[in-house]
Amino acid sequence: MNWQKFIQLEKQKAYYQALSVFLENQTIAGKEVYPSEALYFNALDLCPLENVKVVILGQDPYHGEGQAHGLSFSVPDGVKVPPSLRNIYKELADSIDGFEVPESGNLTHWAEQGVLLLNAVLSVEKSNAGSHAKQGWETFTDNVIKQLNESQSGVIFLLWGGYAHKKGLFIDEAKHTILKSVHPSPLSAYRGFLGCGHFKEVNEILTRLDKNKINW
Image (cartoon, rainbow, N blue to C red; front, side):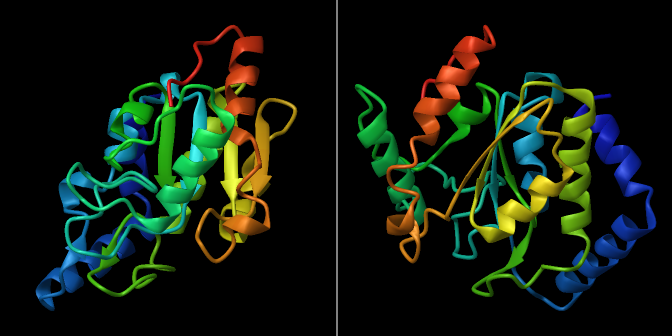
């Protein structure tokens, strides 16, 4: 199984066909949807199933113009770093020796090292947060987690905030590691995200598993 085959199989299911109709109707209605359709599966395209070491779960894509590119918490080069990612960088600077906060919020280099940057919902209407929730994407990404859980071992899941914690129900902690915290958003980061030590802990676990550390 690879992600391309996985996506093909999911697209044949009734829930996904209903999701496709919803997305098509959004286009017909003239709604602007982010990211572009070509980037819906960018997280999977950049991080092949057999390469996944770490999963970082987000909720839904950024809904501002030019922000979303299919990777949770990430924005393309040249786009202002969003508040949650600024807190992620702050935690990295506080816990990883030598980490320098980058000017760019593009996390593609994480994905290419085996970090699956997966949102629970993979599309959103412009300026309308959560607008594509409960249309089928959650089932798709639940199935991504289930596929990872069943076919891989030693994956480290970073679950930040209550929404991400729910995905933990599909993860066998005898095979994988779950690290939980509050969300890095400014609303909650100071209640436990900052100081959580997750990034340092991830690299310590990868070293114990004889895998290459992530160059954050």
